[in-house]
Amino acid sequence: MIFPTIEFAAFFLVVFTLSWLLMPHQRVWKPFILAASYFFYGYADVRFTLLLAASTLLNQAGAIAVHRAAGQRLRKALLFTTVIGNLGLLGWFKYYGFLVDSVDSALRSVGLGAPLPFLRIALPVGISFFTFMAMSYVIDVYRREIQPTSLINFAVYEAFFPHLVAGPIVRASEFVPQLQGPRNPRDIPAARAFFLIMGGLFKKVVLAELLATHIVDPVFNSPDAHSAPEILFATYGYAVQIFCDFSAYSEMAIGFALLLGFRFPDNFNRPYTATSLGDYWHRWHMTLSRWLRDYLYIPLGGNRRGPKRTYVNLVVTMLLGGLWHGAAWTYVIWGGIHGTGLCVEHWWGERKARRRRRRARTPYPSPYMPPAGHVQVLPGDHYYPIANPIARARPLPGRAVPKPHPAAAARLEGAGFAGPGLAGLRPAPGAVAVAAAPEVSVGQDDQPSVVGVWVCRIVTFNVICLAFIFFRSPDLSSALSALGVLFTGWGQPSPLITPTVLLAIAVGIGVQYLPTRFWDRLQLRFSLIRPAVQGLLLGLGIVVFHTLVPHTGIAPFIYFRF
Image (cartoon, rainbow, N blue to C red; front, side, top):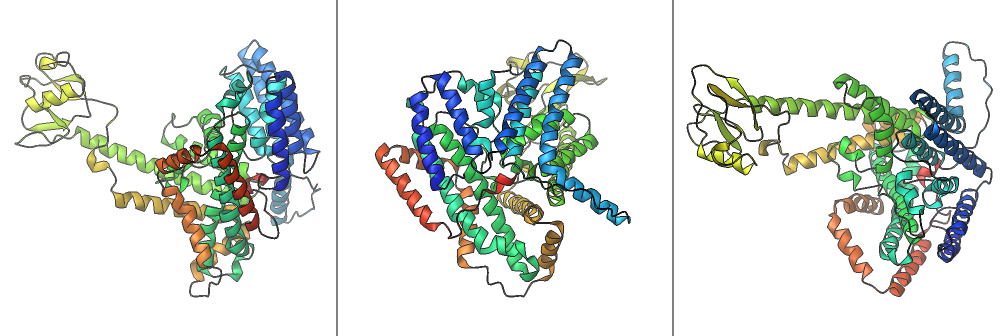
């Protein structure tokens, strides 16, 4: 059951009505919403609900055991056992086939190609999402950031149907407090919910489905049969498709949760406006980025153990992030590209920081007034940036303490230093104050120009698209074939590049460059419309979008298989 279908519309209408009727009676509402969520999850295959129930019992028992354990060693052992149990479930259902295939290929490569036993295991929808949410709950209890909640509360948190199969990855500290009492129907931002649902429907039904059927699927299913321009625009098209597809699900999930009285964190923030890969991961799938940062990158050491260890931690985090998306070498390479890119950006940032620090320690000779943003702290015509406050004194035998330049004194006072005569900053007799700040602010010369910003955006977007070639390709050989055609197949006819495809790509990227205030104002104007008219517009939009659905139906959301 997926959101843009008649089946889900009927399901949600019933759940919405009964939910608010039962909301004042929490002892009845919680079992009801839990049963509705299990019905939603088991609609395709009821056996998957057994896995969800097992995950709930395992993690609730683990959280309570970790919370009650007396010694730190025992707490760590219990946490480790629970995490291994989660990873065992995830590994069996998601990575068993990948592991068997990889081992079999390795044995065949050395002449030991004995066939290994292979079981066909169905991948439960959304197993990665609810497993990560459950693990974050147990880890937060171990860190004493939260306390274990009741079994019914945790079961509702893990199974709540709007975010169950494709996120956002909501943390227990964000959701469980909302279960402490009945939700107030008067606090529902219905206009925002309708706005998000309508926007998600447009992204999924119009843009994502159009690009998938018109260029992305035909090209990536047989890259050798297409030209280099088709490969290029299919890659750009997939970048737009996966953004529209995944952000559509996130926005509709947030909208449906709002209609039921619950708030989720945002998951996307105009990712293709990013000027670096680091910036991109602050905008794309933000709940996963936070999870990887807080539960993997920082526990590995983050950037606290020197540059080399930082690079290792970045690559390991992104490689595991790639494996989280799927059990295939294409996802590992996708994660490796992002991890390597983040390392390059980190190295370049450190290099620029060292250059700024060296410039900050170098005096600027000038017979005139101090340059803007600098103060005179040494005798003669030498000036230092004002960003470096006077923090210590260095003996300078035979030199008198200079009187600060009036402009320098004014700038120091304006920066928050002591009053007349710079009281509290006077150096000891026979010493001259020098600058010694650990951080150096970025001056105007370090600010990138408009052209520089756009160059960074274009380079970042193309690196993202390069990684998406591996992410989208069904296997490694298809990805390499697509890359080969991209560099050699120019000059061939490209019938799939149509004005409709180009318009869809332009719209999918262009809307992200609209300022946030534009959407805020549009949402505000929508909220001023009467609720009856809002509902009428929503119904009309659903009818229009339904007519645009291909005859083959709406494809499942891309992230359902992750």
